Image (cartoon, rainbow over all chains, first blue to last red; front, side):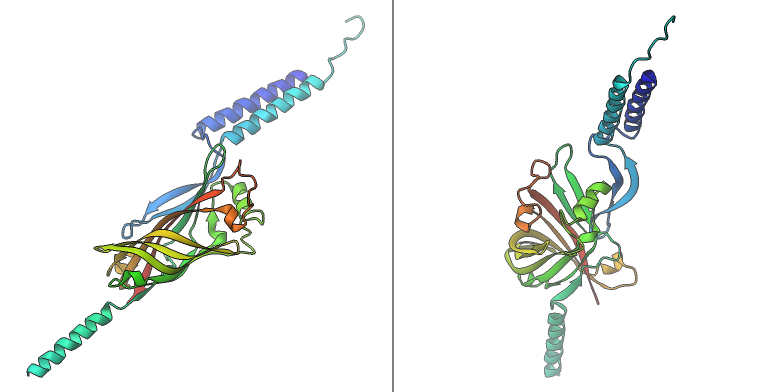
Amino acid sequence: MKRTLRIVAAAIVLAAATFWAASGANRGWTKTSVPTKTVDDVTGIEGVTYTRKFVPGLDFLALGVLGAVFLVGVSFLIPKKQLEPGQ
Amino acid sequence: MKTTIIVAIALVAFAGAGLAAPETFDFKDPKGVNNAGFRVDAPLEAVNGNANGISGTVTFDSENPAATQGKIIVASASLMVPNSMQQHHLHSDMWLDVAKYPEITFESKAFKNVKTEGNVTTAEVVGNFTLKGVSKELTVPVKLTYLKDKLGARVPKMKGDLLVIRSNFSIKRSDFNIQPHQMEDKVSDDIDLTLSIAGAAAK
């Protein structure tokens, strides 16, 4: 059980880091939409529209690490398996 | 014959004077490009957002830009930031309370230090800025660009003029009862604002 929790914790950290890096390694806050700028040819005004897109940030990474730390912590609370007499 | 010519010239001159009369520009943008932006410093990353719910009118006379008057309205609920949780907080009664205060407005009272070069006028506008129900007199720099007969290039089949207004200025959230002197370690007191809008005067 202890081992399983630690493997899950490692998997969470690895998955969060991989997803964060693959999504562009955003060093800011997690974004749930991204701004797109368009320039109006006549007036020169730069308009901004938002498109729904999930971009994980450092807070997402921190949440993954915190989750993993919690699981590792829980793993230390699980008592060691008692050996049966004669084993 | 001579009198007829003089009368004709006078009529043309009168008509010309009529053409240079003040025009009222409507800032409700059918293309949705008009926007007001804001920026506040925060740990990790500055929070940038935009609002495109712009409306209002400005009366502008290209022969007398100093007489410009108007009011610009930003719909508070149109303020967007890239993080949905931050946006929820921004709209909530903790910050802007958009349900109770649906509009952010700036109404001009006077134009100062007006300088015109070609179709571009720069000035300082004294006006009332209202945010979260608090009104405060501000003096902000503006750049007005008058684009004569350009409405058709932007909105097909329409004739008229365009007026582009740009302005950058800063306010303090504590002046407008937005969590005054609280959480300044998380969200700066200073808010940088930018306005980039175009109004149309159809003929």
